[in-house]
Amino acid sequence: MNKKKLLIILSVSIVLLILVIYSFSGKSGEEMITCQVKRGSIEVKVHTSGQLESEKSENILLPSVLSGQNVRVYEIKITDLIEEGSVVDSGQYIATLDHKVIEEVLTAARLELEASMVVIEDAKLDSNLNLSNYRDLITNSRSDVEERKIVLAESVYESPSVIKKAEMDLNKAERKLEQDIKGLAMRYRQLNSQMDRRIIDFKLKEKRVNDLLKLYDALIIKAPKPGMVIYARDRFGIKIQVGSVLTPWSPIIATLPDMTKMISETYINEIDIAKIKVGQKVTLSIDAFPDKELQGEVISVANIGQPMPKSDSKVFLVVIRVHGSDPVLKPAMTTGNLIQTGVFTDKLYVPSEAVFETDSTRFVYLKKNKIVKQLVDTGDENEDYRIINKGVVEGDILILNEPEKSEDIEITGWDIYQEQLARQKVLKLAGDSTSKSDAAKNELNAQKN
Image (tube, rainbow, N blue to C red):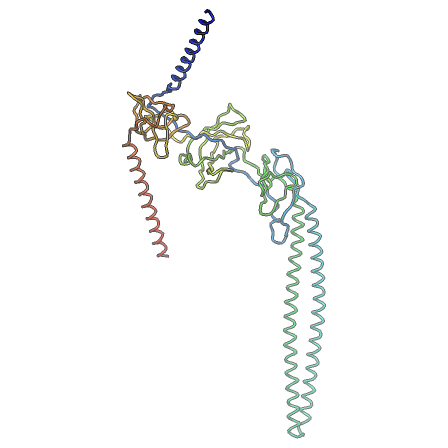
């Protein structure tokens, strides 16, 4: 009997425990987290990370003679470098370029120069010989003309036919003499032209040798001014190092940044970029020095976005100037940038979690006598709060977590939705009107031109 009672009591206890657990779980599912609509000032900021760079810097370049058309050296290797981050003085050693390549090219250029000189000497001999032959021909032609004149003079008492033949022979000899004289002049001009071309070729080869000698002497790279050496990246995006190959089209070896004027380069997503304007104040933190805080301002906002790696999103480059200078700041340090995009006073605001969105509407769960989905017109937001322009009043209670069976909750505030649609329509019409006006102006300008 005791066992029976014990089993009954145990069974009843288990049932009661299950009911209690179910009861508590049901209540926790209905638990609501609420907040209150507040009125006051709200500061809107955009937070991004960036990288410190020098605003102004001087590039250390390949020797300028390397880009000369006459040199024909299209790439050169770096054989030695000082350590990146080294602080150098003006004229101090930075790097060495490959001497071996220039030596090989210089040897070949010298051989070409010598061959060109030999060609000129041979051409001079050929010219002298050619002209001498032409002069001999002219001498012979002159002698022939004199002989024909004598024959004609002696045939004065001969028959008319003999006299006629003597005259014809004389005319023929004179024409030949005239042709030989013209031939000498033409050959002289031809040989001079050939010689001029050979001399030009020789001078080009001579200039190439001189340029290569200058390049050879300039293969030791030195600092143009004092500064900290920061190596550039090659055409593949890799930092310059020993063994890197540079070309006249990517001639930067390193930069000497001006450490007194620093900027932070950051990228803003396409959602927030409309909030960013030149002149906005920025608070900067340095990852390497968490306790250090700097002030700055936006000085540049890119007009064209660029895709993020491995993503369909686009980002826009924003440049922030750091006010003042600090000896601990170094290029490539990571910064946290808090950009102040606006300060709004006397505004209604709620936690961002209180605003829910669909494809075309924004709403809050407003708790009064009953819970309703209240459509709202929202404004700017920061990391924690969002401004509400219309739909709620100060002191209203909102629910932060979505209630159960939210699809059955009544929606109110359709007038706000209609106002938003009307506003969008006006903006669209204004945009279309501007586009048509611009098109008309362009067409009118085209007609004038």
